Amino acid sequence: ALEYYQKNPELPRPDIRIAFTPDEEIGRGTAKFPMEAFGADVAFTIDGSFDGEINIETFHADSAYVTITGVSTHPGTAKGKLVNALRHMAVFLSRLPTEISPECTEGREGFIHPYELSGDASQCKCHLILRDFERDALSALCDQIREIADSVLRDEPRLKVEVEIKPSYPNMYEYLKDRPEITERLQEAVHNA
Image 1: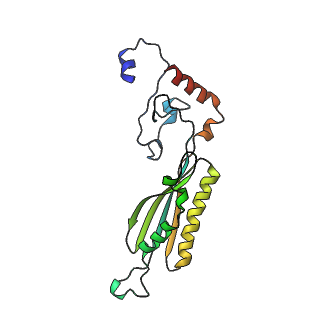
Image 2: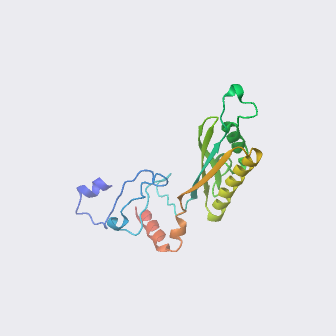
Image 3: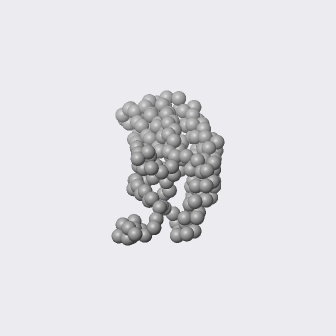
Protein backbone atom coordinates (compact mmCIF):
# COMPACT_ATOMS: atom_id res chain seq x y z
CA ALA A 1 0.00 0.00 0.00
CA LEU A 2 2.82 2.40 0.86
CA GLU A 3 4.61 1.67 -2.38
CA TYR A 4 1.38 2.26 -4.30
CA TYR A 5 0.87 5.68 -2.68
CA GLN A 6 4.50 6.54 -3.31
CA LYS A 7 4.16 5.70 -7.01
CA ASN A 8 0.85 7.57 -7.28
CA PRO A 9 1.30 10.85 -5.40
CA GLU A 10 -1.74 12.40 -7.12
CA LEU A 11 -4.14 10.11 -5.22
CA PRO A 12 -6.03 11.90 -2.45
CA ARG A 13 -5.13 10.70 1.03
CA PRO A 14 -4.66 11.98 4.56
CA ASP A 15 -1.24 12.33 6.14
CA ILE A 16 0.10 8.84 6.73
CA ARG A 17 2.77 8.10 9.29
CA ILE A 18 4.33 4.65 9.49
CA ALA A 19 6.81 3.26 12.00
CA PHE A 20 8.39 -0.18 12.02
CA THR A 21 9.28 -1.47 15.48
CA PRO A 22 10.38 -4.88 16.73
CA ASP A 23 7.90 -6.87 18.81
CA GLU A 24 5.42 -4.15 19.73
CA GLU A 25 4.09 -5.87 22.86
CA ILE A 26 7.13 -6.85 24.85
CA GLY A 27 10.20 -6.19 22.73
CA ARG A 28 10.45 -2.65 24.01
CA GLY A 29 10.66 -1.51 20.40
CA THR A 30 8.58 1.53 21.26
CA ALA A 31 10.23 2.34 24.61
CA LYS A 32 12.31 5.16 23.13
CA PHE A 33 10.02 5.99 20.24
CA PRO A 34 9.92 9.77 19.57
CA MET A 35 6.14 10.27 19.85
CA GLU A 36 6.36 14.07 19.47
CA ALA A 37 8.34 13.77 16.23
CA PHE A 38 5.91 11.15 14.92
CA GLY A 39 3.12 13.70 15.02
CA ALA A 40 0.19 11.49 16.04
CA ASP A 41 -1.81 11.13 19.23
CA VAL A 42 -2.65 7.50 18.51
CA ALA A 43 -1.06 4.76 16.43
CA PHE A 44 -2.35 1.33 15.51
CA THR A 45 -0.53 -1.94 15.05
CA ILE A 46 -1.19 -3.63 11.73
CA ASP A 47 -1.47 -7.21 12.91
CA GLY A 48 -4.17 -9.79 13.37
CA SER A 49 -5.75 -13.02 12.30
CA PHE A 50 -8.07 -11.97 9.49
CA ASP A 51 -8.86 -9.06 7.14
CA GLY A 52 -10.89 -6.40 8.90
CA GLU A 53 -10.04 -7.55 12.42
CA ILE A 54 -9.95 -4.74 14.98
CA ASN A 55 -8.59 -5.19 18.47
CA ILE A 56 -9.28 -2.48 21.02
CA GLU A 57 -8.44 -4.57 24.07
CA THR A 58 -5.75 -6.94 25.17
CA PHE A 59 -4.40 -8.46 28.35
CA HIS A 60 -2.59 -6.55 31.02
CA ALA A 61 0.79 -8.30 31.08
CA ASP A 62 3.51 -8.74 33.68
CA SER A 63 6.58 -10.94 33.85
CA ALA A 64 7.58 -12.74 37.03
CA TYR A 65 11.14 -13.85 37.64
CA VAL A 66 11.56 -16.43 40.39
CA THR A 67 15.10 -17.22 41.50
CA ILE A 68 15.79 -20.05 43.91
CA THR A 69 19.28 -20.31 45.36
CA GLY A 70 20.17 -23.47 47.21
CA VAL A 71 23.20 -24.61 49.14
CA SER A 72 25.84 -26.10 46.90
CA THR A 73 28.26 -28.75 48.05
CA HIS A 74 30.08 -31.72 46.59
CA PRO A 75 27.61 -34.59 46.06
CA GLY A 76 29.99 -37.02 47.75
CA THR A 77 29.61 -35.17 51.05
CA ALA A 78 26.16 -33.67 50.46
CA LYS A 79 24.10 -35.54 53.06
CA GLY A 80 22.45 -33.02 55.34
CA LYS A 81 24.14 -30.10 53.56
CA LEU A 82 23.04 -29.90 49.92
CA VAL A 83 19.89 -27.92 49.17
CA ASN A 84 19.21 -28.52 45.49
CA ALA A 85 17.73 -25.44 43.79
CA LEU A 86 16.49 -27.50 40.83
CA ARG A 87 14.44 -29.81 43.04
CA HIS A 88 12.86 -26.86 44.85
CA MET A 89 12.09 -25.08 41.59
CA ALA A 90 10.33 -28.27 40.51
CA VAL A 91 8.23 -28.02 43.69
CA PHE A 92 7.45 -24.37 42.90
CA LEU A 93 6.35 -25.27 39.36
CA SER A 94 4.26 -28.20 40.59
CA ARG A 95 2.31 -25.84 42.87
CA LEU A 96 1.23 -23.56 40.04
CA PRO A 97 -2.47 -24.12 39.48
CA THR A 98 -2.99 -26.05 36.25
CA GLU A 99 -6.46 -24.60 35.71
CA ILE A 100 -4.99 -21.13 35.08
CA SER A 101 -2.35 -22.21 32.59
CA PRO A 102 -2.63 -21.15 28.93
CA GLU A 103 -3.43 -24.71 27.90
CA CYS A 104 -6.51 -24.64 30.15
CA THR A 105 -7.78 -21.09 29.57
CA GLU A 106 -9.37 -19.19 26.69
CA GLY A 107 -10.98 -15.89 25.82
CA ARG A 108 -10.79 -13.40 28.67
CA GLU A 109 -9.47 -15.88 31.24
CA GLY A 110 -6.15 -14.87 32.76
CA PHE A 111 -3.23 -17.22 33.12
CA ILE A 112 0.21 -17.95 34.56
CA HIS A 113 2.63 -19.35 32.00
CA PRO A 114 6.06 -20.74 32.98
CA TYR A 115 7.99 -19.55 29.97
CA GLU A 116 11.67 -20.16 30.51
CA LEU A 117 13.77 -22.15 32.99
CA SER A 118 17.51 -22.16 33.51
CA GLY A 119 19.94 -23.08 36.20
CA ASP A 120 21.67 -25.85 38.07
CA ALA A 121 21.65 -27.43 41.52
CA SER A 122 22.99 -24.26 43.13
CA GLN A 123 20.65 -21.70 41.52
CA CYS A 124 17.63 -21.91 39.27
CA LYS A 125 15.66 -19.15 37.54
CA CYS A 126 12.19 -19.28 36.07
CA HIS A 127 10.56 -16.61 33.90
CA LEU A 128 6.76 -16.67 33.97
CA ILE A 129 4.38 -14.53 31.99
CA LEU A 130 1.18 -13.38 33.68
CA ARG A 131 -1.86 -12.15 31.75
CA ASP A 132 -5.33 -10.94 32.62
CA PHE A 133 -7.76 -8.44 31.11
CA GLU A 134 -8.45 -6.90 34.54
CA ARG A 135 -5.68 -5.10 36.43
CA ASP A 136 -6.85 -6.34 39.87
CA ALA A 137 -6.96 -9.92 38.61
CA LEU A 138 -3.41 -9.54 37.26
CA SER A 139 -2.30 -8.28 40.68
CA ALA A 140 -3.90 -11.37 42.22
CA LEU A 141 -1.86 -13.59 39.88
CA CYS A 142 1.30 -11.78 41.01
CA ASP A 143 0.31 -12.32 44.65
CA GLN A 144 -0.27 -16.00 43.90
CA ILE A 145 3.27 -16.35 42.50
CA ARG A 146 4.69 -14.71 45.64
CA GLU A 147 2.64 -16.99 47.92
CA ILE A 148 3.75 -20.15 46.10
CA ALA A 149 7.38 -18.99 46.29
CA ASP A 150 6.94 -18.29 50.03
CA SER A 151 5.52 -21.79 50.52
CA VAL A 152 8.68 -23.29 48.98
CA LEU A 153 10.81 -21.21 51.35
CA ARG A 154 8.72 -22.30 54.33
CA ASP A 155 9.38 -25.92 53.34
CA GLU A 156 13.15 -25.33 53.22
CA PRO A 157 14.33 -22.20 55.07
CA ARG A 158 17.95 -22.67 53.93
CA LEU A 159 16.90 -21.57 50.44
CA LYS A 160 17.04 -18.03 49.17
CA VAL A 161 13.87 -17.36 47.15
CA GLU A 162 13.44 -14.11 45.22
CA VAL A 163 10.45 -12.95 43.20
CA GLU A 164 10.66 -9.96 40.88
CA ILE A 165 7.58 -8.72 39.03
CA LYS A 166 8.07 -6.46 36.02
CA PRO A 167 5.22 -4.82 34.10
CA SER A 168 5.24 -5.74 30.41
CA TYR A 169 2.32 -3.80 28.93
CA PRO A 170 -1.13 -2.53 29.92
CA ASN A 171 -4.49 -3.35 28.40
CA MET A 172 -4.88 -0.70 25.71
CA TYR A 173 -8.60 -0.46 26.45
CA GLU A 174 -7.77 1.59 29.55
CA TYR A 175 -6.63 4.34 27.18
CA LEU A 176 -9.30 3.87 24.52
CA LYS A 177 -12.40 3.69 26.75
CA ASP A 178 -12.32 7.44 27.37
CA ARG A 179 -11.69 8.24 23.70
CA PRO A 180 -14.48 6.45 21.77
CA GLU A 181 -13.82 8.60 18.69
CA ILE A 182 -10.54 6.75 18.15
CA THR A 183 -12.27 3.38 17.87
CA GLU A 184 -15.03 4.89 15.72
CA ARG A 185 -12.48 6.34 13.29
CA LEU A 186 -10.65 3.03 13.15
CA GLN A 187 -13.86 1.13 12.45
CA GLU A 188 -14.75 3.60 9.70
CA ALA A 189 -11.30 3.27 8.12
CA VAL A 190 -11.46 -0.53 8.15
CA HIS A 191 -15.00 -0.44 6.73
CA ASN A 192 -13.91 1.91 3.95
CA ALA A 193 -10.89 -0.26 3.16
